[in-house]
Amino acid sequence: MIILGGSACGEIGPNLARLLKARYFSIEKRDFPDGEFVVKVPFDAKGKDIAIVQSTYAPHDRRLMELLFIADALSSMGAKSISAVVPYLAYMRQDRRFLDGQVVSSHVIMKLLNAAGISRLVTVQPHKEEPFRMFRGKVIPVYPVDTLIDAIAKDLREPYVLAPDKGGLGLATRAAELLGCGYAHIEKERDPVTGAVSIRNAPEQRFDGKQVLVVDDMISTGGTIALAAEFAYSRGAAEVDVAAVHLVMAGDAYDRLRKARITRIYGTNTIPFGNASVVDVSGPIADALR
Ligand code: R5P
Image (cartoon, rainbow, N blue to C red):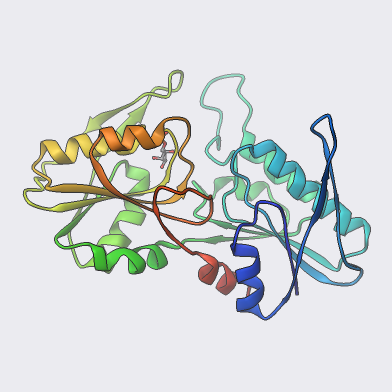
């Protein structure tokens, strides 16, 4: 297999090549004055199995287009198989029509990946797996909770895991199991128009003297984590930290977390972010590719 890194593969592209003992190439990309760009595959792809590595964080559309362009170029060169390793896959949260007339964006992305010639998709901590039924080919979701928690466990003294919504329960239970501590979850609701979050149902739990670790699949605006932190402190937490797989960190999310008295932010390298302790997820992705 050949690993072909897109411009947003970060360290995961070269790491995968090293772990899989595969050849590594970076895509050649040329920007035009009007903001458009073109890509060029720097090797003969004919008859080869190729894995493109490209994360699709903001600007999402540009990074997605690059992935599609690379796949199509490989396809037209006669590649034997094209896999896409997309550490953060954009648009997955719109996995249904929340309001009449809306698009189901995640389904469109699946169709586009197929149209560009991608037959295998590897992605990390997808928000839900439902969109994958629209993909023709194999999808391998990678859940790196063990890698994330193993790397941060040494920092945690008297942890207690808190999931900020029901959807995060799977992550929370596994994190608590690895840390050998208790867990609780909040039931949150989000206004489909404004996006504002509030607590619908809170557990009875108190966290007196505990180091509460809020775990979630991603931090976007930081609203969900701020809400969970406020709740944990109101129930006696000594410290609140957060561990999230994807550090989307939109807009003023970081300031919001600081204001919410989040002490430490842990995340992974699916998206680059400087103000956090970042854990590499190349290992579990390589396992998936094997
Ligand atoms: C939602 O269901 C997700 O698991 C995250 O909790 C959510 O996407 C985080 O978004 P934000 O940081 O904007 O509250």
